[in-house]
Image 1 (cartoon, helix red, strand yellow):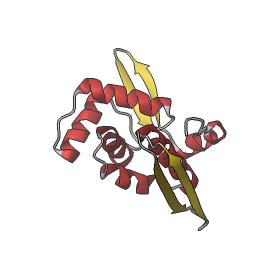
Image 2 (tube, rainbow, N blue to C red):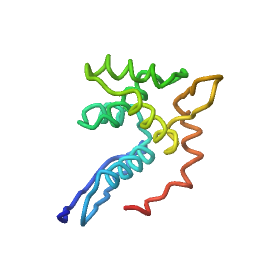
Image 3 (cartoon, rainbow, N blue to C red):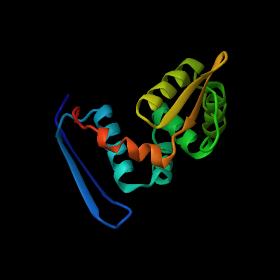
Image 4 (cartoon, rainbow, N blue to C red):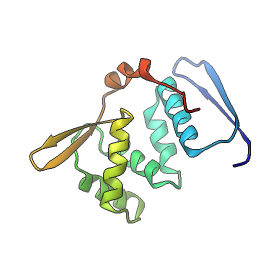
Length: 141
């Protein structure tokens, strides 16, 4: 993989300008972690949902759909699949949706619980996300 430079500039909710640069091999995982940090620091999940919906990656599109359409209610992987397919007019396998939802839960974006014979997800509240802030790690960057 060739070396690249990626620079991100953004303003937080208080108007403070932040600049972050990566020099070297840039991977999708590094960019994803960087965007997670930007979202956490800027305090604007709605803006990130819009930005994610423009991404060509299905993971980003699914995250966008969940943050914009499923916030405030519980849902199953089947319901997330239907919302994705309706929003983007694109097919996605249920197994892929389940994998992506698990990843979002692992990252602290979603909560998950077993209800009888199904798994139910919901978007974490902003207070719950803020409580995770001290655990934020950029070791892989």
